[in-house]
Length: 283
Image 1 (cartoon, one colour):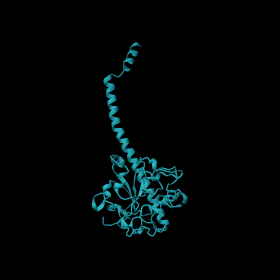
Image 2: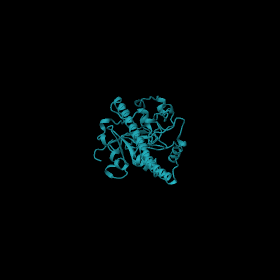
Image 3: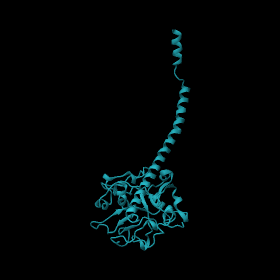
C-alpha cells in the first residue's frame, strides 16, 4: 500500500518551470496564428455582407426600373430653392425603399432623412465605422454608405438636364441648391436602362463612407470618382477598409471588389468621368 501511494504521488508531481515556459510558449504561438486568422475571417465576412447589401440594392433598382418604364431613379431631386415651404428633396434611396421591403410616405421622402423607425441595414456597410457629425444630425439621422455614380452635369449644365449622358455616370440630379438656376418642377431628362451603352462596365452604386452620408439625404447621393470615396475615410484607414478596396455594383447587376485604381479607365489616373465611372464603351 505504501509503495502504491508513493508511486501515485510521483505521478502527480508538479510541472517544472521549464515545462511551464514551454507550454506557455506553445500557447502563445498558437494564439499568434489564430488571432490574425480570426481577424481576416471577420474582415472577409464584412466584405461579403457589403456585397450582399449591394446585391439587394441592385435588385431594388431592377424592381424600380421595371415599374417605371426602364427609368432609373434620380440620384437627387430637389427642384425648389432651398427654404421654400414644401420643398421636395428626394434621394435615390427614397425611391428604392419600397423595393427593399419598406415603405416611406411622401412626407418622409421630403424630410431629407429616412426615419430611424424604418431603418434598414442594407444601406450601411459593416466596414463603415464613421460616426455621424453632430452638426449634421437630426432626430432621424442614421448613416448610409452607398451612393450613385455621378452624372456629368458640370459647367453651364450644372444642375440642369444632361445634354449627353454617355460621358457621365448614371446618377442624374436636379438641384436648384447645387446649380445656378431653378430647375423644372418635372424632370426633363430621365436616364433609361437601354441608354447605358456598356452596363457590364458602368458603375451604378458605389461605397461613399463618410460621416455626412445619411439615409434619405441628397448630400453624397452622388459620387464623382475614387477621390470622393477615399476622402471620407482619410489617412491610413483606407488601407484597412476592405483591405484597400471598395465594393462596386454595376448596371448589369454584378458586384466586384477591387482597388480604386482598377476603375479609373483610359486615363490611368484619378479623373472624374472615366473608366467605370462613365457609360462610354471606349474607356
